[in-house]
Length: 79
Image (cartoon, rainbow, N blue to C red; front, side, top):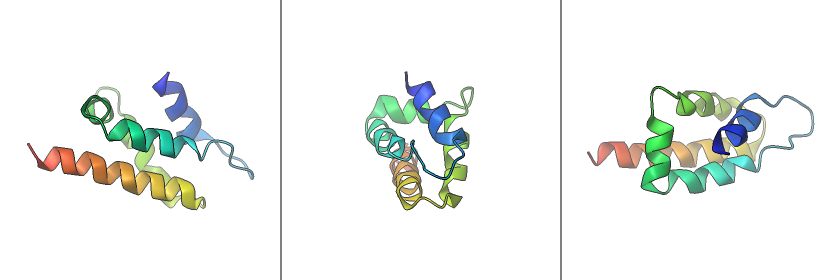
């Protein structure tokens, strides 16, 4: 379930980041049209939960968030 991945990614707090790899999965989801629509769905607010991770101490998380943002913006701008 993508929502469980997102929740684990967005709300995990700890010294050893066990969920930073989820950013790579979310990047792959954002590469397909259905994934971008899911992230852009304002009722679910998934993108709002992801974007604050750009301030994470984990470089893997930050890079993933920037790539997700790029994929979503590219799709949004093409409309």
